[in-house]
Image (tube, rainbow, N blue to C red):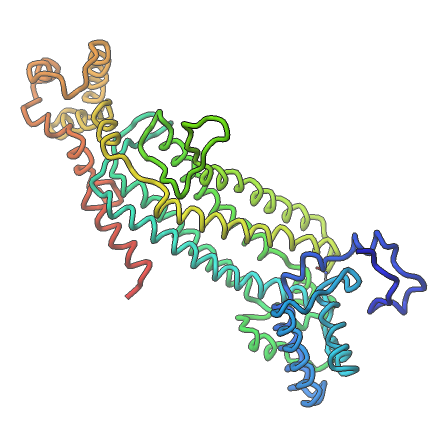
Length: 465
Ligand code: ARG
């Protein structure tokens, strides 16, 4: 909408109104309205602090609080709809407050600046969002555990360099993502400590002449600490960058799993089929079933990385203290939050009900390659043959078997013994896929006992005693 030349809160310093296009350019109300409830909560705490310290009377404090809560009710009913003339959410709230409670409303901004105010709002917002994202991470982990429990003894080729390496328990593979997202959950908890520090009372940049009680306001808002330097308090956005970095890592993990699911769903791999609830069709090729969900997650990852880069670049040249550049922190944060939540939700559904593993294809895959070659070398090494020598012998037998179109399990005992006299009839059991996996029972390995223990630990992590 085209702004009128209605006076601004700061207008008496100015002789004429902002150019309409500049008013639009300058305004953040189009997006920072998302902070309105946090702005109200922060203002309520500020008003209570002003009353407690005697800067305002108790009656004035109460009128402000009631007015602010009235705005909250209006907002929730869709009746608080500020426009561009209000510039930003802070002015919008103050403007409406004065409309509602009269001149007392003009006292709310005593001993405060929009600079410490917006810093407070953003922190309250992120604190909430971090809680929600951590819950979403837990739901994703829970879906992983449920799948893992069904597939402890299902084998899947394990790869390095995307070349078949050694078979692993499918549960072990899925639980690798549990571990990654557990780090994500921990990391967000750590970031939350630095989000949860109050800048309120830092004023515009230098503190205030009023006898405020910062600790009291911070306590009302549930902050764990106070910024100790007002210049830092109003201009620090490290916490926003840390959050976006933590969010980027969550998406790295979701994107890696997405990539695997896309590969597994291909005819070439054929390890999973996509259920109808999470796959889409083609507009022209009737046979297609496309993995749009993991593709979108993989694709959306890029924009969150972009937000991280954007915030870093936004900050790097800023002199102390507040600069309007900081208004540009909001859209990247909001989009990061929305993207991470949407991707976690979609991936949770995908893991829980969007994919079905194909046991026969998986069993055929692990039985039809040379991924038990290490086990032949280990077999000899366990019988005293130096590992490097055993490795050389097995390389030789892989080469001749490939040429003969055979697998290791197809070699006769005579052929094995021609290679080395230490081979006995138990070589066949030692190289069977189930045994190959079961035998890797070192801590953190894919052996079934290890995997069962890991599932128990994962459960305990989600529901601590
Ligand atoms: N809308 C502004 C922002 O998001 C609020 C702070 C404005 N402060 C100022 N000194 N102009 O950063």
